[in-house]
Figure (tube, rainbow, N blue to C red):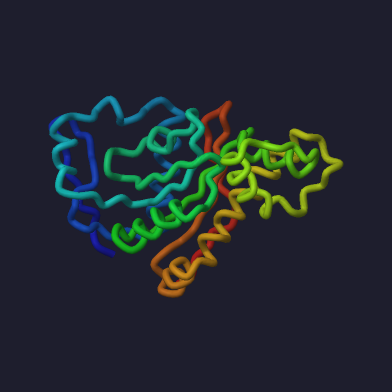
Length: 224
């Protein structure tokens, strides 16, 4: 495996340079896990960003992972994973759902940026997922554009026992929704092609708002 190429600023802040570094999906996931641990410990790198380190990225980007996350203001992936500028390609939309625009962004990340790891990052208490549950359980209606969002979540909520406490249902629904989005990515023509080539892995995670910790789902979708 090729060595990662980095640029180090005068104060020691590392950022990915545009020299096509090649890392595995496992290594990319390890970097995310380590970044989340730094975030939890408060030993982050963001206070070391310099003008010099920003300038190194002006000619292009080579992120090591793509993150599809929720728009919730409390869950910024760059901070949660203590990632430097240029290290993550981030797509954020309420409910971390798939749409044509999201699919196009992910296709760009795979075809042009060649990120080896795609992560769908949900979070506990997600309002978009809660809205979908309320529609499913109680027939609650929503404004037209929110309804489109809710409709994209509903297919992934099958199998949740309506007799469970509402908090438990929401927790399960958040996880179901992450898996539903992962499934849509994996079953897309581009996803199937890259998985067959062994050039991509998909991973789901749930961010805990109270602790700041990312809980990774056990299964990783990949093919070598």
